[in-house]
Length: 266
Length: 264
Image 1 (cartoon, rainbow over the protein chains, first blue to last red):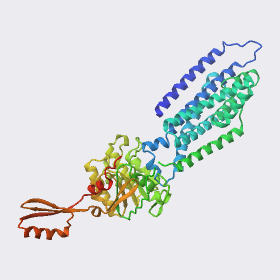
Image 2 (image 1 turned 90 degrees about the vertical axis):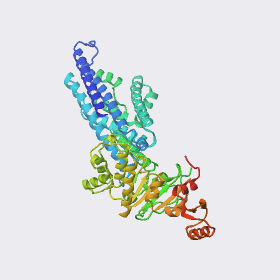
Image 3 (image 1 turned 30 degrees about the vertical axis):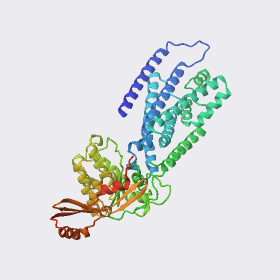
Image 4 (image 1 turned 45 degrees about the vertical axis):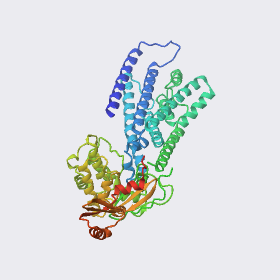
């Protein structure tokens, strides 16, 4: 499985480099109207890094879900879990060790892909985000939240059902984020409100949006405005409140998983 | 649905206890309660003086599930090493060598689990259950995937464990195996113990078979103590007596009488 992940990741990074190469090569031929003050290099760079962050989050979530979707129910069905659970080590320890293992792999993966992709844009297009490190950290934190949810789901759902459920949650979160951008563009209170609720309900999405916001947080003017309207525009729920909430959410999901697992008959 | 109804069992120290019953009788549920995989709704279960499922209880037992698997990419040695760490055993490489030798897997110590036959994996499972020198071994169908040679290996192993004071609760469908090794047996049916005792106690007298010049005659209900009288009566009646055999029911016959046609 890791070979497949590695091959697909290398393929993605190659295609991303290719996209950067052609976009920045063509940039010199693009001239916005004289009265439209848009920094085309910033716009292109931010768009590409935003796209890379979306792809990184997606790949990270795919890896996270496949590492954890069958940790309890599916492994119990296959007989993998029982020899471990009867040992004196404790069910909570077993579950948390699976979280740490999957988390370590996914955090390294997400940070690696993010920094490589960002560097590709920086070296190819000579554009660097306003914030370098924190967006990657928030992406990795978002994936950790997904891992906690997947572990929780694995206690009560079969492997297949859990995989579907987590991917649907992930998709719902992404759609909610896009809705937020649309809602702000149209100044629709209802859509903005729905998106805000979704951000707090699915904080991995909020962390991703916050990371997007940070790559152009010091970009102002028309360029900044146009970026905010786009699909990689960034968060309307952002900052330390959502980060603290995400940390609490992660701990609560893990605690619920441990509690349910402790009571589960195998 | 009630899997067990007031089952009351004691497995003594150094005793080999066999659990028999048809599918759905509650044998596996009983074992799972003992090892902490399933919580009982009523009653108490203790293992080595500690509440079943507690850390202390789990630390003193070894378990082989009926359906179990090890990660395919692990070698036999790595499986045992993992379970040594989980069990807190300090036996190290010496313990792993000894256990693999015990189950005739010394030559396959570095072979991956997914490259082993089912029988080899079963024997590895038994070795895994013995990690940390448990006081009580719970084996759920330990010989189900083994050939006759493998079954004999396990039988001798169980006898060796009993001699070393390890208690064993053995759940099996193979009556012949149970009869050969177990000190005591309980027969479960619909969650209740319907018969229990030593194999000899469970084997009931079925009569006496007398061979004379008139042929073989079975006197049902006669006991071993009636044999001299029966021979004397036959001789007094002018018969030539060639032989006499005291008949007892096998454990299989006792089992079939106890469970009737119950099967799942």
